[in-house]
Length: 528
Image 1 (cartoon, one colour):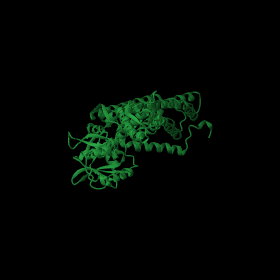
Image 2: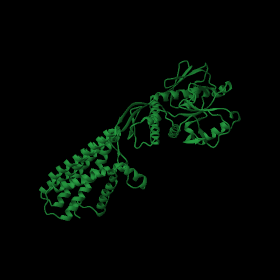
Image 3: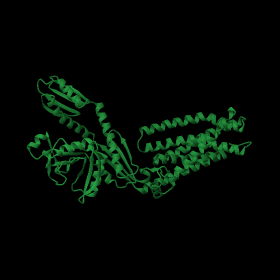
Image 4: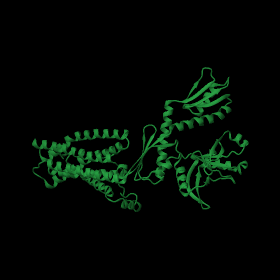
């Protein structure tokens, strides 16, 4: 083979691969032509590997709800301070460090020491409690403060926001809401989009509960108070207006649960739950002690006692139930919350808006019309400018759109209005490569080259320009995807896929079509 025909030569396997990519694209894009009921039926009846998925429509295309949530980070820092204060007291007593007072201060704790206390011992205790504390000592060595620095505060806030997003995702997924969009915004906010959900009230109720679960001993008298090492008074859900005193230190915490399911016990709705190994052992040891038989223990959820049963016998095996005046829906919701886990901080709804399905349908129609009109005008322009080769480029352009839809369907990407704008823009980029190639071919033909030589030179010399153009576009799109949120990400996703498919179609598909035509027709002269 001569060096002048290298670009115009395609091996048999290359041709097969290009055709296979086109066929697969049609197969995976086809479900988008089916109605919703047919797709849902196919998803339940067809094997998982079959291409039955379609592109997910975003909130602006199918309607739904948009929530802007704020994570109460101050609450996390206050809890951390209280925990540090409560944990320090026994540690200082055990280390035999005399002190007069322990109090919470912004971002940390303050210890007022008695005269003669060992400062180094205090430092060691604080570092063991939290190695992120910056330790400050007064000039007379009587006051020691442990405070979190800016780096530690930033780390805590980032971890809290990340955990909150994960718990929100679990809770929303448990409700059966399909394809929610959950993203971070700023330092303490979460965007939650629920396509197809017009009334988000139940989701808001589930997200409004922190779901911090704990089990505490009920304090009945002075002896219990002394053994508890501190108490707290909480309201009872079953008796509004009444409070109950509990030991401050919990027997169990919610992170020891491995599963929770709604159930029926003697015809009454209850929540059955399972404990992990350490939790099951701790609960078994506690309930097996003779002095605890007959005592009450309280089940606390978000600062309210939802049940306070008595221990009648040892509870071992890691299985137990939570009973109370629950409805069936309440047991379902409580089970969901316990399975998903507790939020590290309360969430507050800052903004809520709903997009109706009719408005979404209008957007879909407008987007479809925009794509069809863009495709039509581009085809007319290419055919008018390049004749038969414009038709070839238009065929590749149509397949390019099919490939975009196929890849988005495979990735289960979400299509939004800005995403449709990205597809329309991609159409222009796709034919831009063909314009460069065809114009270069014209120059080579006018210079007297043969047909095959002119086409080979056209592809060769336009390759660098096309590659540079697509590469710079891809860099810009990746930056948008990395730093953008919501609509900007939707635009970036379709543009990224479109740039990749248009590059493939221009250099492989259009080249295969032209080469096949040349081999079959063997024209003596051509007009580009």
